[in-house]
Image (cartoon, rainbow over all chains, first blue to last red; front, side):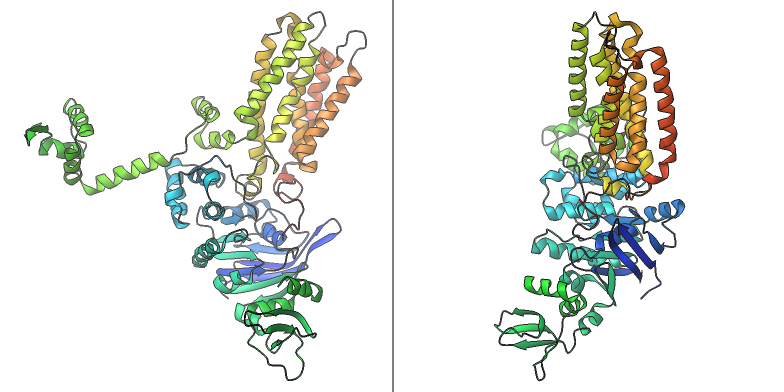
Length: 290
Length: 290
């Protein structure tokens, strides 16, 4: 990994009696890192801490050389941060240009000509130049996500925090969005929260698996797949030993768990490794869904 | 002008000088009038002019088309000298929308009418009771996730949330005070007591802001409103039906309350640095879809 731009040590966050994050430590460098985890894992809480929206109860955090727990550090981070929330809000009667222009003012770009040039630049970067004068309420879900991403890219941020940006998009929009995100990791740190393993496989150089507020894995996607080496096998019927089992398109069952002696092992995928890292109750739940 | 195919056209030298911006009136007016009607001369101009000038011209035109149009509130603010960027920030304040201002006007009209019909009373209680609550409701509508869809985005931008809150509050207070002031003019028979809404309005607004840091903007407004009704009920004279709040002594007490609320607000400034205690994020709970 390149020189760390984000270093978190022992982050803990509670909401009354609920512990959202438990002693979370990790570091990020330039490139795209996927934050993978099921619903309720604590991904959004962690992203909000990095985005300076909330402060952890315990632990140390350095973001782009600044400490976001202090007012000057928080301001320094915010000046170099691009944040795409899970449900970005819009003013539906604004045009795409007007909305990004509004966010640019919030990001201290007050010189009008320079600000408008920057708005045009980021809208071009997300492929929305031709749609810039359309009202947001007339744009598709994928285009709205791109408007929000354009707003996040204002000022060429050193850290880009994207909270489940591909949720709710149709397959084509998702592919286009992944293509866009893949290009953003050059020269900057991108943290992409998702619960879709395809997002990680296609665009991430590193992956962090978070479950029940704890980090279960930190490494590259290939290493995550190797977690399941020797733990995936095929069978004509559902294997009772499997933590997770599903019938594939060829009719055979793919099983993840503890293979019986002599079972025909198959090459593991990142998804297999991810399922094995989750706690057994969740893995069973995920398997049922699969 | 010169003849070409039995028609009048601009000669080459005039076209060149026009393209370079060196042609003065009245030749300039003549050439411009002709160019509007003559496609051939427009084509010749494009060839005769410096390509960099043409590109710059297109860029200016493009930029002019991008520029978001200003609504009536924003136009009015720019006209009275509010900086362009600040006017844009304020113009999106929900409490300054035309629909909200129309509701304020209607409410004031009704309460003024009721007070006018009760001319024999010592004070226009319907008007004085309602007018101070209007800025409180306006502020509650202007801040937080329920009515401002960009609140989560705003909370992580370099612009301090507290500054934005104060800007919006001042704008709402100014707008509602101006409207209430106009309504006061319709009740001259009551004398100076008709201006008794002003100090309670300021005090209730400051109190709402101070409580926002602890309970969120909507709850703070509800608590302030309930407190105001309780104060009116507790101070009303059973014989005259007039509250002691609108006497000189009562106004002095309200001024003291406003000062205390202002100090409390100043003390809570740092709580606006992150959204954790402000309920500014749009999720129903900390772990939603996380």
